[in-house]
Image (cartoon, rainbow, N blue to C red; front, side, top):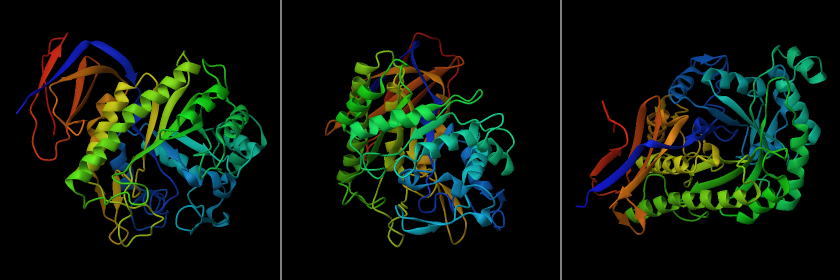
Amino acid sequence: MTTTRAVVDLDLPGPRISRHLYGHFAEHLGRCIYGGFWVGEDSPIPNIRGIRTDVVEALRALQIPNLRWPGGCFADEYHWRDGVGPRDERPTMVNTHWGNVVEDNSFGTHEFLDLCELLGADPYISGNVGSGSVREMREWVDYLTGVGASPMVDLRRANGREEPWRVPFWGIGNESWGCGGNMRAEAYADLARQYATYCRDHGDNKLYRVATGANSDDYAWTETLMRTIGGCGKGPLQGLSLHYYTIAGDWDDKGHATDFSLDEYYATLAKAGKIDELLRRHSTIMDMFDPCGKVGLVLDEWGTWWNVAEGTNPGFLYQQNTIRDALVASLHFDTFHRHAARLTMANIAQTVNVLQAMILTDPDTNALVRTPTYHVFEMNTGHHDADSLAVHLLDAPTRDDISLISASASTKDNTALISLSNLDAEESRPVILDLRGREISRHTARI
């Protein structure tokens, strides 16, 4: 068997790996919010002001840098005023995107910001463009971050929050090419500039405004948006999103989460590996209009998406999680590190009980389990805000043009972290680390 040599020049650091590449996503979808994060203050499940204590404790170990909310598709039918004020006075709505369940709005703005503070995560809020208004979004920004005297600041104080929150990330809609309005790129691009103009900075809170970007390989959308929003810091937007999900089959039959063949396993990894091409080609288009690199690429939805688990609501997107999912995650992270110059943030879908989750909770026993994907996030915390290091793989084995070894590395505080994944489902694969440019005084390893 051929031995792979992984060459790492420890003295040649590359772009900084933003901790925000390890961001998360929580939508009002299935049991992500209700039964996942939120159980209510009267629940027998241990909680902190209604938020599950065990979920918070588990996620704090991941050092979650940011959390995206309230969607997803839900964001463009969510009206924030319905989710503030006394909970027993909040109006209900029907979540038409996800299962047609009644949403009671008991988890709203204050509860989300409380969750972020408990996690130590920066809030990333997706505003409503699809069914909202410029005024509604502007007032939400004012409510959250405003200082001094204003109607929205007065309302926030009346609802129990004296000081403004720090909210650094703001999405201008979600999937405006689809569930967020079925818009043409040209129409949305103009709206994005308009909405972003009225999402103002207040006090020392500086917004990073993210426009809805492309679905997968829709490069024409990226070109139209970049042509319109401008680059080099001259426009009102700082980021452009991208969504890409990994499936084994097609959208009508995505594949089973746990019952899959060897061919489906490798097909999944091939689909996951496409993220490198997507990031490279979208970045190239962005370089044309933003050679200064001021507009960040934000992959704010990614992960595996399988057929829903049997016996569960098809609108809840509940699925199990295996080592295959963990390897999809590790392959993505290795790719993210290589694209750290343009890629500024990424958010896996989703954190609890939905799609490629970190945590699954049992609605009958209230038990909690950490998934294989959870452990990849935990093992990679050392890459947060570290300088990337190039890894050159020599004699790496392949199957169907898929490299069976995935790797990345970084350096921080006079240490180096090297991540290696064996994608071969049938055999172990030997790898020799050829570390150059620095002396190694101590080494440790984890599996």
